[in-house]
Length: 154
Image (cartoon, rainbow, N blue to C red; front, side):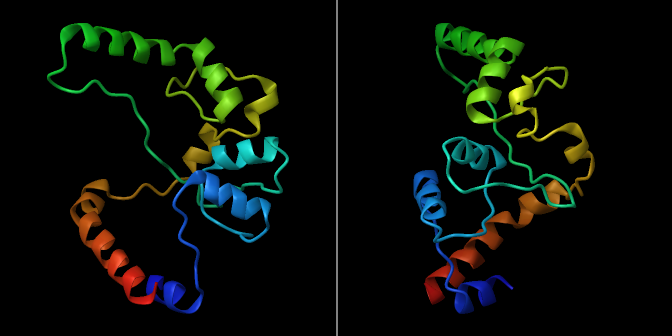
């Protein structure tokens, strides 16, 4: 199916969020798979964009904060303080209002003005959770195959 899409439908390959947003605003793209948070941002800027969560549930993306191995202790300490701060409700509200992302803390309460733009627990309950070990084993071969298809028809 991927080869058919690339070969017959002349898809756009987007290289940045800004490029994607411009194409939506110019109505050169009418449908695409992207972050609901980014769509909410564009919508708040007046762009003619909306998002919907598929019947099968929200699409997931993993983001995280991490402290790299072997960094100096003083940097690890401050990185830990930063991560701790981002998990607090005050910071979570700012992130939700400005970026439309939820916090890992499930008890976080968000302002009413943004709750309808955030993925919520009922969206996540609909997810069909894949076998991540199987995906991890196959991911590099899928990426390689997709790149070959793009290069063949691009």
